Length: 231
Length: 244
Length: 44
Image (cartoon, rainbow over the protein chains, first blue to last red):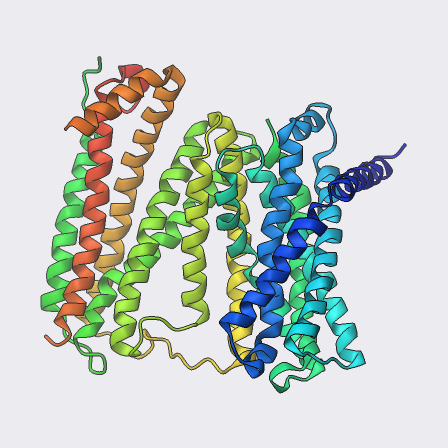
């Protein structure tokens, strides 16, 4: 078997394993999604004005995503470190790049589901409307932003895994790094939603930024994840 | 136990005295001898500490990255590289904090506000938070090797991350609303004595940085040695420090 | 000097934090070196 096909098989095995754990425990559905929804409702209380809500809806969707992401990542690595699964994989000589990619894919799937839910919530609660072109743009934005977020999240989540005090450390490490995603995804989503009179075409440069971010951190994560979780 | 007290040597003491004298000279040149700026008046005097502070911060984070890269490159896996990286990172955080505070005081006088969402300021704030995270990771515990690997990787990631943040904030400001903030340094016409004061500041702060790194990495070395020897001695030292 | 509070304030803040840090390092080094052997202090 060639090296690449082995790596691909491990990657999907890890992704499947993470998703199956999630599917069996339903933490995302039963806890994280309601948490994200209540955040959206709280935003509406804090910004008590329909006009403002429509204007800032894209930013709120992404902020809620970031906060929920922290919870999902903690969860993704606590199932590993609770019974030393990550160490076991490493000791068994499993390719760390494949572990990284697998966990990123699983995280990406979960985040994407969460974002779809949040955008749906924004439609209902904040009274958003979208053109067909905007819909496509929103989809591409979610895809590229989620790829970047999942890779960064897995990389830094792996660093903080299995360490005391990681619950407080992860946000400190992660939130500054994902600032470009927040900026890019919010602006692209504004264009897709047409909030503040933005045109759909204005969003594509931001999707470019999101793509650069995603590609960069897929590459960095593949290289750096091994040393980070080693020993 | 030891015949020598402290982390100083003859060389660091000499360097320390030179740094101290230069800083005193800087205070005289910066606050008394140098002229006020035509446009900014006396507020330009903040520049003589603000600019050297941010320069040292960049220098420190650069040194952190270089030492981390050397450590990870594997040719020379000495923990000394990691300790210099850590010492330098910590000092960098201190100097970024100083430059953020002095910068916002300066901004209040020249722009009328403590903070503007300009790309350079925003990415400096991110620099500050990122390296606070770096220091937190260094304190995570585990073996020295674990600490060194984790923090070295993190330092190299930070070097990639900061330009990306800078670029995206720049894009945000330029596409979203026009960048209204003029470069404060551009308005300053530096005459000879002002320029001399600025370079004196840069030079003095750089030497101060060297002095601080030397001492700090030696204390880190002692901390590591105590951790290797067992915690007892370190606890005793802490207790004695607290009593004093 | 106009704006003296801001100008002097920023100098005092800078000097204060740098001196505090330097003093902390030196004192910590002295406290630790009391319990160190000469082999643990290769700079001596």
